[in-house]
Image (cartoon, rainbow, N blue to C red; front, top):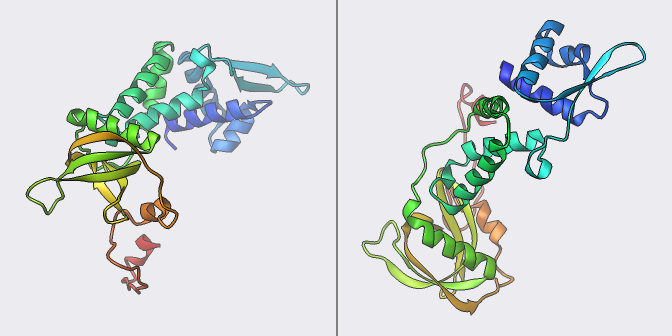
Amino acid sequence: MKQIVRQLDILRELQARRYGMSVRELADEYNVDRRTIQRDLGDLREAGFILNEKRRADQSIYYQLQKDTGLPLNFPIMEIAAMIFAEQAGMGLVGTPFGEYLRSAIRRLTQAMPSEMRQFLERAAEAYVPLTRGHKPYEDAREILENLHDAILERRVCWVSYRSPWAEEARQYNIEPLRLLPHRGGLYVISRVPYYDQLITQAVDRFESVEVTEKEFELPDHLSVDERLSNAFGVSFEEPMDVVVRFTEDQAPYIR
């Protein structure tokens, strides 16, 4: 286990344990010697984390992470660390209003931290590397994204201009947008097309315009968004069917 990952996990344990943990317990937990744990605790204190000590009747010392961080809304440290990681993992939100809101919230929280604490949490988040394959730019699609977001919340029909991958020109028609979802660096919307009475998956970057109308809609009972989400991507064509796929013995461990 990398040192920075172990130290972040120590913070989590010291925050979660009501009575804290001793150096011996931490050493046993992470299978390292006591001097390593003592160095970890020293590094955490240097980073600005307040570790309270409580001496037990047997003279052993237990360490607890002070829960009152003094930060806006008193966010627990581990929740802030999770938000920083979420920002790094959410590359598909780059250039979107949602990505900007996330960065703004994290910036407001981290600016109130001591610089050493902020740097520690940023290093800790970098230890967990999200597997990304690049992301699509959405800087020019802000209005489209905001209109789709508003229409989903208010259940309003949209008049859109959308160009399918196989079409030379965009087509105009009504959609009933239901969900926005990220997938492999891109953003997609699950919509119902009233003319065909079916759910479709559309790439946000293929919308040329989205106009929110005053007309409200309700999803028919015979259509399921969750079912559509389960096969929105990947190999899907017509009706589902059962198939048997054989793999060579040396490849089988990677499939299970």
